[in-house]
Image (cartoon, rainbow, N blue to C red; front, side):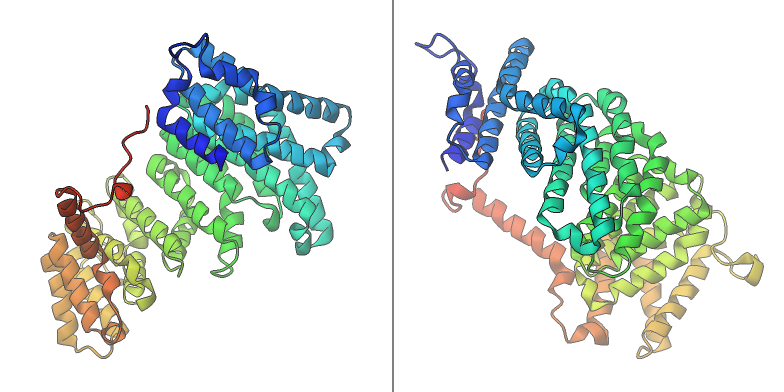
Amino acid sequence: MACDTFLKIVQKCRRKFVILQLGETEPFICELLKGLPTTILDLETHQIHTFYEAVGFMIQAETDPYKREEYLRNLMELPNQRWAEIIGQARQSVEFLKAQEVVRAVLNILQTNTSVASALGQPFLSQISLIYLDMLNVYRMYSELISTSIAEGGPFASRTSYVKLLRSVKRETLKLVETFVDKSEDQELIAKQFVPAMMDPILGDYARNVSDARESEVLSLFATIINRLKSTMIEDVPRIFEAVFACTLEMITKNFEDYPEHRLKFFSLLRAIASHCFRALFALSPQQLKLVMDSIIWAFRHTERNVAETGLNLLLEMLNNFQSSEFCNQFHQSYFLTIEQEIFAVMTDTFHKPGFKLHVLILQHLFRLVDSGALTQPLWDVSTLGASAFPNNMVFVGDYTVKLLASSFPNMTPNEVKGFVDGIFETRNDLPTFKNHFRDFLVQSKEFSAQDNKDLYAEEAAAQRELERQHMLSIPGLIAPSELQDEMIDT
């Protein structure tokens, strides 16, 4: 508790520890670093990590880069000494790294580094550069040990304490790299110095491993890298796709339960690619693009809300990107009708009510697209129906939607279905009216009429709550001080 309190104090007034105070001969941080071994002597491992994080925040407040480097070097002296001893022994005999006490020591060192990196950010560069390549070699070796254990002992081997310990080292390695990448300000340096070195030890290892030995943190690491480096990563996307896509899909599409962490992180990676390296998708073969679309459809069908929401957001971004690309006709000729059918399917499924807002946005996008001028080719199958089967895409989509809903809602009369579809086209340019039109349709349907439909009104309810909160904020004393945003943090 004392360490947690110390961390909170440092976060509030970190600058005070690195400047010379009245009556002192040196800043407090210098005194702290000199007595560091004695200070942490009686602390538990997790307390030491908290303490190191607090000192990291102090160092981050130092504006002189030379002093900052010196402070960081002094802070990391103990873990670096232990790291050098372990790597030195390992170079003489790799077997040394397999001992449980050594694995625990490696894990402890990595956790200490992660704590400091999370607080320090970009200035942590000199420290991570010192251990980076050796850390990747240790990662590779422990991964091979895990794979061998699982291959020999079967799925139950992954639950043994030794394998769990080895996997903890792998995860902490990935967490450390992700933390530094996320906090780093020098994107060019990350792209040139760090990403190439991790491709085979981390990405290649993920592809080679058995399913039970694949770490979901690999997916979140590369999502973070792409989110930070953006289009700089476009040339690496095919390799990332090749390494993680098919093997991860095979793991997560068998059912809706296995590998829950891989599910969300996989679609977060796909969303990062679609957002920042969209043109890389143009280089995919038609089979690969179909695999991407099938995976997105599978995601928004998912009963887990986070996965379904990620899939819907990803689909909406892809639709917007394809609309403004030279592949607009080609993409929508292949997937327009499938997307419309699948979105209507989940929208009219009571398990997917929380996704209503995004369902409406996607359908609005589709129905506005048909006469926007972006589509210049017919959406129907010309080879079967002929080029003159419909006067335009708007008439065709209207006809298709009537048939789709008539088959899905046999209890509705043809006139009711036709009236609803006509209303879609009439209201498609006004989102609130468009949303109400769909909401009225769902509430009146047999599936929804006997249920609690508050999820369909979630967006409006949230807006009303925020309005009430703003009103309360305008009246002093109505909101407790503990609920107000803390403005005392020392920057």
